[in-house]
Image 1 (cartoon, helix red, strand yellow):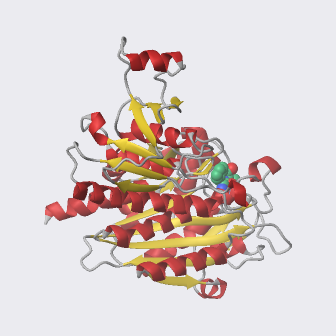
Image 2 (cartoon, helix red, strand yellow):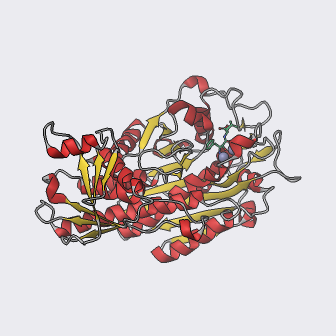
Image 3 (spheres, protein in one colour):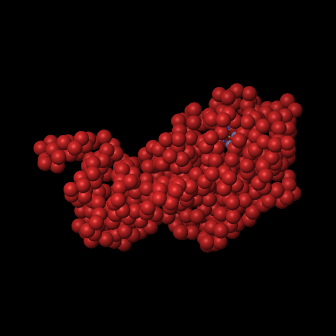
Length: 480
Ligand code: BES
Ligand code: ZN
Ligand code: ZN
């Protein structure tokens, strides 16, 4: 989706009209009612005689408008119209242009990489006419520039997560990281199995041992001139999760290419930073691994020693994400000094979906002020988050008789929380209040399209973290 500012309406285009109310006696209402159009969100009516697409929207801003804009563009997916036209003047300055652009770019995403040439997605264009509105061209350009950077990266993340596992394995993730780091001037360090072995990272190495693909730890760094804050973002990059010897069932293995969504979101955020010019030093650390079966696979009953020396009794090889993140947490805290925040992103547990449903990211941690900041960012950007509480009665659930801990609690109840508490054991005391855990198992991948999210990967995490970074850099700016 290309968005262009121009006051000229081309001959061949489709005018987009958002409808929030229907005034009882108007001719337009009569015509729309006759055509079966209602105000139900996302309902569309294409008037082919006048080239007008009517779209019902609950309101003209924020999520309402994003969803309606996405529905509009999706409704003409198979039509020959390639150009849309929107006149801001028509809405008396009430149309939220940022939300409009976001809905159009995110709603016009289709993963067609593996489709026949004739089925590939044709890029569309939307022309926004601003004359007669309160917006100046400069203001609009600035606003659209930011939306485009963020949304293009959301779509980039969707592409990575949707790519099938035979074509996207740890080495490819490392190559992607290297290539894009070069483009954006980020530092990029890639550890292979040998280096990880030297560093004692046996938890991550064990998970990847039965794969034919080498495991990698990827460390990307964005260092602007005068950073106001320093943040570490960790991502679970399971390019495939078969469950390992605790093999998943046939049904639940399908879509496990999505297990790289945490890592992909971290990459997506990293590639917005230079373009947005954010004043924060950001470290993106990714554990890129494939969890497979084989004669040399790690086993339930194995006891693994993580980078910090702690031993983990494996009860279930399908709880592999926490093992990967445990070593990533150790690496980050050993290698990076004096950071302000440390967040981890993963599709960690099915239990988080049971708890919050499949649209919402589960967030956990010890710092309520920080959680409030995430809540604010979520409300601003439209991603959905929910907070799951710890309590003292979970504390002993991960104790092992023969090692320092087990990797899964004996009960599945509260599984998203016990997974988070496993990671908590790898967060140093001084960093407890800086840490948050994001379980995106539901939000990262949709088995059925919803809102402006298509079938498959949603790109969750990018808009949320960019919004958080924007907020905290502004906050520390105003403190100076
Ligand atoms: N990658 C899965 C979690 C997942 C589930 C992601 C559904 C996306 C959708 C994770 O590695 C896993 O298998 N977790 C287990 C943990 C259990 C063995 C304690 C789970 O959720 O069943
Ligand atoms: Zn698993
Ligand atoms: Zn997994």
